[in-house]
Image (cartoon, rainbow, N blue to C red; front, side):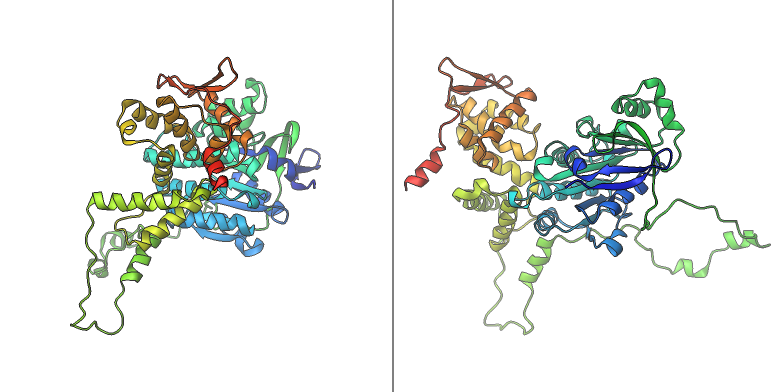
Length: 504
C-alpha cells in the first residue's frame, strides 16, 4: 500500500509528499544546526504518519513525550536496567505499540547505554514480530559518534553497534531508521551512509556543508546555499522524496515540545535598594538544607527483588528458630555458579535459535533463583561469554596466544556476530574442518543457510577472513591475523548435533 504524507510545501505552494512505504525501505537522514527546525520536521513526520505505521522515538531531551496525549504513544522512562529495557522493547514489537524512550535526566553515557539496550531489544525480536516500525533517533551524533569522546569505550561500542544494526541490517527486520543530527562530521560515516533519503537544513560549518552537498550530489560551490536557509526550510533528496534536490518548507504541527526557544522578556524596573537586595543574605539561607541537583540513581530491578526476597515477616522470628544467613561466596565459587547457570541454558538444543535477549532474561531469573550475590551481569558481557562457550574451546586452547588474538579480533564485530566469528576462529586454530552453512546458521540463531553465507561474506568484507575452495570444491576459511585456516569442509553438510538428536 502506497501512502504519501504531507510534509509541507515546495515552491509554488505544491504539497511536498513523502512516500512512507519507500521510506521504510530506504531510511532517512536529517541534518541541520541548532535552531534549523529539525525537531519540528521530525514532529511533522511523526504526526502525519502516526495512523499508518508503528513508531519508536529515541528522545534524549524528552521533547516528544507530548505525542502521548494526542496519538497514544507509550512513554518509556530510560532510568531502567538493560534487562528491563530489552524486555520492554521486545513487548513493544510483539504488541505493535508506538512509544517514546525518554532519556531526559540521564548523563550522556547512561543515555548511550539505555538507547543501545532498547535498540538491541527491537533488533533481536523474533521473526514473527518483524512488523514495520519507524525508528526515529534525535541527536544521532550522541549515539553513533564518529570518534570516541569522554564516555567509556564499552558504552560507545554498545550504542554504535546498535545504531549500525538499525541502519545497516534493520530493514529486513522491519526497522526503518530516521536519524537527525546537528553535525554530519560528528556522525559515524557507516551509519550516515546507509540512508538513501536526505533532508538538509541550515548549516554553517564548511565541513558539514561540504558533506551535505556530497550527499545531495551537488557541486561544492553550491554548498553556500545551506547558510542561507531559513528555519523550517530543508533541501530534500531521495526515492521517498524527490529524484532531484528539492527545497521544502515544513508544514505546521499539532503538538508542541515541552521546551521551546528562549523568548525576549523586558527587564523589570530596578528598585532603589538593588545592592542591598543582592548582597544582604536572607537569614533562611543559613538553615536551608542543601538540595541535590542530580536525580538519584535508579535502583536495579534485581536489587528490589533481592530485597523483597529477604524481607522479614510481620511476626518476629522465634528464638528457637534463628534466621540462617546466606553464606558469602568467594569469587571462584560465584564464577562456578555463573558457569553452571550458563551451561544449563546453553545445553538446551533449542537455545541456539533463541534470541540473546530471551536467553539473557532466562539467565537473570536463574541467577536470582540461586541467590547469586553481586550486581547482575551486563548484557554485553553475557553475549560475549555465550559466544565463548558456544565456540567450544578447551582449556588448553584457551591458554594459547592465538586464542587471545581471536578474542581481541572478535571485539571488532558486533555482539550478535561474535559467536559465529569465535566458532570459525576455533576451527581454524585447531585445524578442524570448516563448519557447514547449517552449523554457522545455528551459531547465529537461524535456520537460513543463505544468511550463513552472507555472514562469511561480511567477515571477508571487513578483512577478517579469506574464503576460498580447495581442488575438490570444499570450503576453507583462513584468518590472516591468526596465521591459521580451517581444514576443507563441505558447505552443504548437515549439522551433526541436529542429525544426532533426530536419530535419538
